Length: 497
Length: 102
Image 1 (cartoon, each protein chain N blue to C red):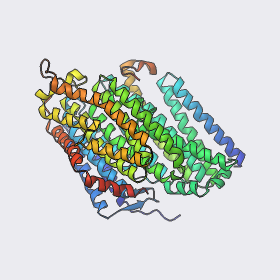
Image 2: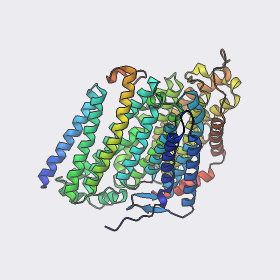
Image 3: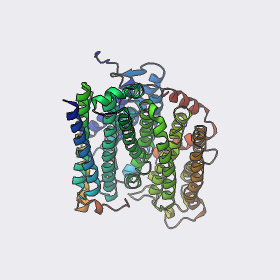
Image 4: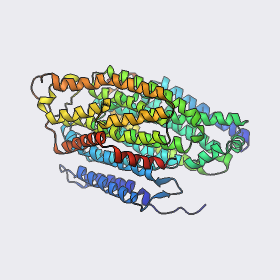
């Protein structure tokens, strides 16, 4: 074995965020009683610093794989890291006023957000299954704790518990898949696993693992693939592994829900793409149909589930399940156009979900959040700008032209059609029509119904206003001028070929 | 370790994993459910060690250390969540956690 290279430049963004997380914890500990450490400001500085590091690395300094090629800064990783850091910045901006209004304003909130982001950054740059697993767990453990941070709200505790149990259950499945792939190839690196599975590496493995025939070895490889699919299915909340999502999204603090819907989903899809495209391309003929079936049921059940909801957060949770389905329609068309489409859509999807959940968080006053459709009645008179922004997000989720969501969905479905999965695109479009009903119901309530009683909602704070402006801008700009992001997504998708 | 011994280790690992999965679905006490998840993780560890032996490389054994560490961190957060929900509910029956629909 060659001595491990000590070039850590590709890891720099994650290191900056991790150190900031520790600094936030320490700042809280050293603040005199009653005082407040500038946790949000520190976190923003750290995330911005990491974003600068990503830009510098993208400029050419410090690309490449390090630590025995277990972590890499390639175009794919850098695309996702920039997205995740931007999600982190917007989530922190949203958090300050929300935490104050719900009396959860503690330093550890920001530290946990930063640690979750470290996990996400690692997840999208890992080239090796051990690193994928460790990053997945860094992210998940931090988010379990974040979900349960409102200790006096039983719903928050329940959300944390359900997320924790299902999350660790799914990690075990993922890990068994890793074990089987390791057993078959003797390797944990994605590229070497692909090599082993392709070049008849199964034969010696079969002997070593005591598997009698090559047929049995292939069967074992398929079982491993299925186990990985279950693990990622849970993390991206695809049906039938979605049952935790509505509860966890509804019960978790709203800003954490925004982070879960945008960041966790993006990072999980990043790892999903990389593992399946880099380690298991030789089994694509087997896993693509399975993913196609999952995509269909996810689109249908997610949208029908959302129709039935009266709680707004729960509705958006089911909508995020449905969107996992839309994204998976392009996964069957990956690599190439499918990957690009997923990368592009994840950006608009993240902006829309941060905005949607962020709008609810921004209205929260003294622990009371908008929960039902009637809470939205007449919002266009009380908060005209926020109502307009929320309309943009909901319209984009539906996929109406001149929003980023339309371009993204068009991209996803045309990738599916070109790969010969036209039926997926048709189901996706039909389900988008169904989704218009529950999304636009909120818009109707905001604009057509008169406001009732006294105004119970908070003024929109500066940080939240900035966050909502960023999200709205991203959605609208991508709707009319998607070219540059498409080009960037194409370059990023290139490193998975 | 002979091939048959490796096979036996793998069969045991599979059995432990299956017991864990069944336990997660059937047990009603949250702590027992959590222990079943831990059982699944340790079943995976056994598989890693057996495969590591079969291949004669150390990657599998190194992985076990990572899994153990992660499982410890997960247990710390998980038990904290369980304690905190117990303060609200005074029960650890999973059926009682139904403020929101499952």
